[in-house]
Image (tube, rainbow, N blue to C red):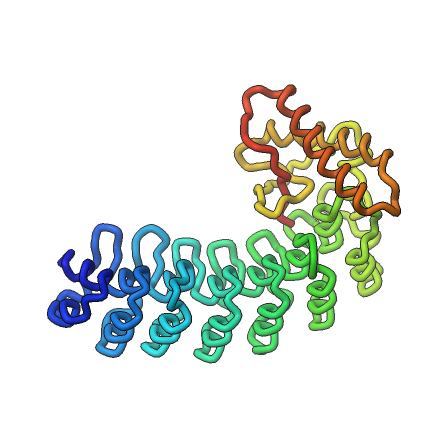
Length: 343
């Protein structure tokens, strides 16, 4: 049966047709003939298999990807044609991978706008949640893709105030996402009825913005001002540690020692300013103390009106905090990263 997979990978349609009785075969990795044809960009093989009843919902073992999910993840040269061919076979769009994500989650994750449009037309379940209770809307907001966020909300099937496993709404995620497009995301969500709920740590979206904004910027930022204009009561709201958003912003810069945070947190690729890593708690404590001291010292040298200098000093502060941390703890050789309390 391995010869079937070889034939599919090599584009040998005649052999694939000859071995039709083996089309349901999966190898030790769980790969089917359709998985292989997708991975090897064999459009003609994919089209023939789909048109002649090949099983579309078989899942490989590592990520539990269906052929449709694999196409999104690998995006071979003929991706668009392959994706459309698979979709014509009417695969089950509710199938979840090892993370609980559906193909709609993956389209949002990989920011595939046209594929996501096709999935919505095929009535993909917009309110499906993954293992962290995140909808595709959470994912799209976290990626900062306003177009996909709009597409999902405009279906009328996406709850703009839905919460994930940690109580974060899309508005929290928009505030966590620091950088270009954040203000537009926040403004759009508010215009669509987003509410400033607290998450499991008691943090409002304003707290999230304060924790993840540029630590050398003047606060409140434009995004923070947008939040407080829409929801004035946020200014006085405190989290489970009794801190307002303003205090949350200030504590890493002005405090000689970081405020202890006993709430659980996760590391993030995006890099927040606070929160403990699940597996490097001591490393995070050393990093927080060193970084706070470095930034506080460096900020005194920065002109408020010189943005370029601010960026440079932030970079220098990061380098200084890494050196301080390295000297304080020889047991951690992980590269310096900003940890965030995902809230």
